[in-house]
Length: 320
Image (cartoon, rainbow, N blue to C red; front, side):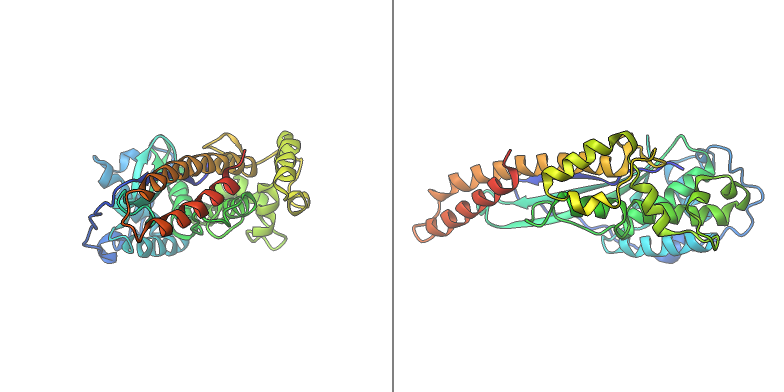
């Protein structure tokens, strides 16, 4: 099992774009074929053996996951999410060099009216092409949990802060803990024997049930990064909120995106997002400033007021 950090890309489009929406969603066509007999499947072999093309391999991977009770539920929810964007699951899932849910947030505004902005997100799930079949299935369950359930956020808003981002990344709905528990549930259904020899056993409670509380505790272990993490939280004014949950023990869970414990990786991700947001806001301020003199006589005051407010927000958010 390879855990990854949800990745967000920030883009600003300076002109309004027309987005073509795909059609043809059919849940029955998407995941309706059931594979009821897995005895001929070689879980230790590469999942690329499932087909001769990327699309056929992804389709087969989906169908195998659909043969587990928990996988079926994940796929149904993910299909519903994809349908909201006019897509089916094979449009969303791709092969990649690593397993990750890659989301792009696009902020669009026009040079003619920089006061108007529209936000859109688009997510793609990548499954590591170098995995064997069972790990590809586990990663698919993991990443689709991110894709479907992770709480959306807008880094351009005033309430985007590091405390909320870490919480959302680690223990929030659709975060790393939820995704890990989802893959462990699938693992148990696919192969009880291999499950019993996996790290999933470490988050079983006294009733032999997967425990979110135990998983949260383990995901907040940062080991040698403890002092650095707490210093960052002190600087952000959130030291008290994390002093009781962050631990010094050796971390069991490492982000493949940053090769760091998840709370530490979340800080790195937050800082990267904030840097891009501030750069985009700086560009927007330049456009708004140049627009003040180009508007009709009745408009400059309105634009100037918006510019002044945007500048105050920028300085509050992006002050060094």
